[in-house]
Image (cartoon, rainbow, N blue to C red; front, side, top):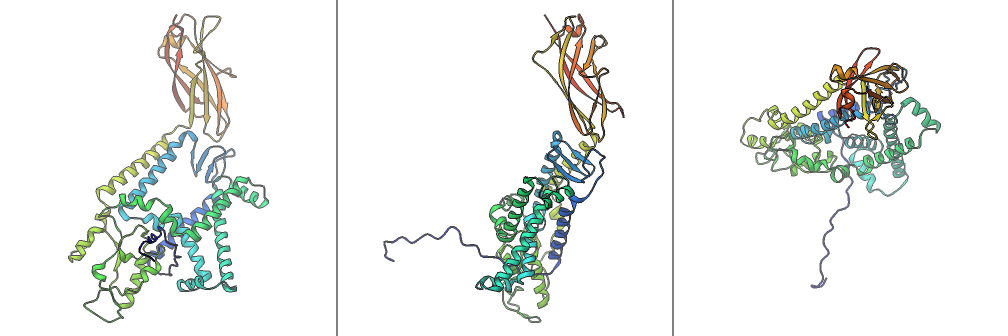
Length: 482
């Protein structure tokens, strides 16, 4: 290269190095298996649980009925106008992430995130088919032959079936599961159902099988947001380098006062699903899954050293441990003003939602005045206002409701009359779990104060004829002033 030539700049991105985590046993790995089993079990079982709501309503315990714009969760039914319940749950989910991250770091990412759960499951299948870490690395570097093709096709087939099961379970949350299952096999299900299953299958296959840690590092925004949620009291995974350094090979029973406990076995690196070395310090990629702790503890047991070279700790603990002082109780890290504030907000919203849920009325209606014209003058001189009444029956059976109007004074009440379109006694029957729209006419007698006042507030009452439940709403009656 001549002195006048400009060297090429280094690439901005390096090629991905496939990560093959080694199998490990330990408390945290066991906890991850338990949580995976519980979460996947709930995901696949919930759509098949039945819940009797009567002959007019679906009997699926958990159902997002988008066609009828309702959400069923066991005994709870959420209507479209009650979307604030869903908004409240989303806010609670966000605050919950803030709470857990400020207290325990990326515990959500390490144990409960769907990407982590399905990636763990895909790695388990990969290990069954291709072997543990070293065997998978050898297979990767091996030329394509009958063995490699057989193992890869077997693995990809199992991954596709797992992705298909994932997408298939997802669509069952949006319609009656047994009916949809029959339709899917008969080829008569909605095209949207097949498209949703195809998309979910493809994304699960790609994300869990091939992208894996790339989703967590590049696609997910949470690693970057979490830094704002963490402080020196946040409990996260760390390497006690003051105890482990300097590193060196050491056999069981040997003792070298100039050497630390770390024997540089790379066990913590080899089990990491993100492909990082925790000994380099806290990193964006770390999902705090605890597998490096299990691997390190296993090695410490083999060489007769105390466990905990890698463990969960807070930044504040470092100075105490270096000085030989007792470690701060873990609850002092968790129960601090920041986490208590998050918990108070989270719990307050939860209590508010529960209270609102049990205080909501089974009768829902609204009344809208027709403003063109504001009023109509009858041949008799009476003033008539026209309203649109929308009455929603939240019961599981057909229900009859009675409509009445109350004026502010006895004089106005005497001049008031009400007529519900299509009804002689101002009662109306609303089908089960349905909404009825009806015209309502309110009239004021000629010459009355109500007829000659520009605006008078009336109270419209709706009464359930069966159990006498009542709800009301204010409406304005427009009179003739000239």
